[in-house]
Image (cartoon, rainbow, N blue to C red; front, top):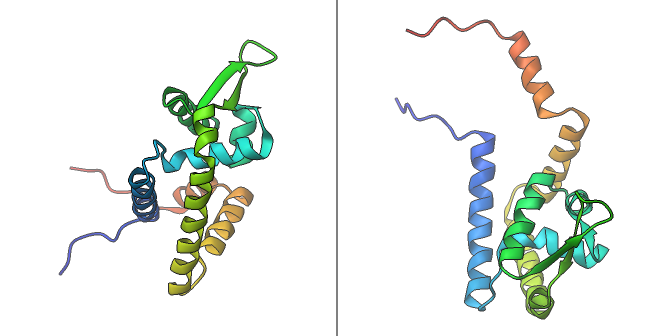
Length: 163
């Protein structure tokens, strides 16, 4: 009997992201771009919004404030964004730096190729991964995963003490 456990949802999602991001990152590297896949939601938000606060970028890009802040800090170290003070002492406004602006034509080509490759991948699947992910996100926005876990814990029987 095989005693290995099947990978859980979180493990599968992390593995999928690793496979996707590694490949996309390699294409940037091969093109000589000093750029990471995780920067894309921030760059796209700044292209849509212009200079914006970290909070606004996070909301627009569907990122947590913490994830947006960490990504923007790394982008600042890499010279891709500049930060300036906002209207109050706590707020920082993010702007695309010239280095990032110079990369935009090449990034646009990479994004088009990546989206085309993703569409090709979806054609190989039994269901649209993008549609399933949007559906899962809507379901979790309606009833958060924490609530779902808490409900299952409340319904479960106590486990025997560990020895």
